[in-house]
Length: 203
Image 1: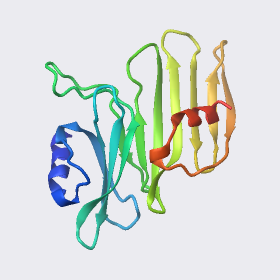
Image 2: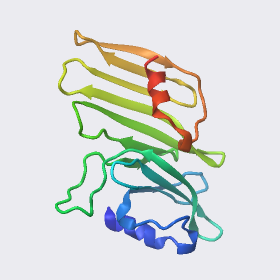
Image 3: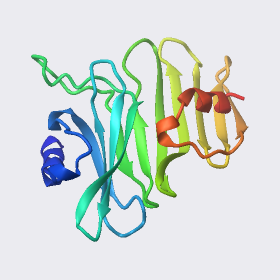
Image 4: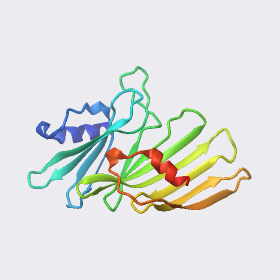
C-alpha cells in the first residue's frame, strides 16, 4: 500500500498541490469517479500529529489539462491511531481508517474503534460529492462492550433523508429494533459532528 501511495504522490505535479504532503504520513487512499465525469479522482487520509484526528485531501481530475487538481482539505475529521513510523519496533495499528469506493461514486470511510477500554464503537461514513462539495450522505455505527453481557447497539441511517434503523441489546439478551426518523439535512463533511448523528440514532 505504501508504495502505491508514493506513486500517487509522485504523479501529482508540485504546482497542483495545495500544500506539501509527507508520503509516509499518508495512511490510506482511494481512487474513483467522485463527480461522475468519467475520470478517476483521488482521496487520501493524512496524519497530522500523535493522538490528533487526521486530514482528508480530495483531488478531482482536470480532464482538459490531465492532472489531479486539489479541491478540498477536510481538517482533523477522521480519528485513528498514530502510525508511529518514526518509532523503533513500529507495527501497524488495528485502528487505522479504511476507504472504499462505492459503485455510485460515493466513498465509504470505515473508522475502527481504538483498542482502549472495553467499549468499542466502529463508525462508517458515506461521503458523496454534490454541487461542488463533499457531504456526509450516510452514517452507521456498531458498539459493543466486551466486558459486559448484552451491551451492544447499532445504527444505520441516511443523513440526507433522516431515515434509518437502530437496534439495542436488552438485559435479557433480546434485541430491540426501532426506526430512526430525524430531520434530513445536507452537512458538509468539514462541518460534520458525530455527536449529532449519535443523538439522532438514539432518539
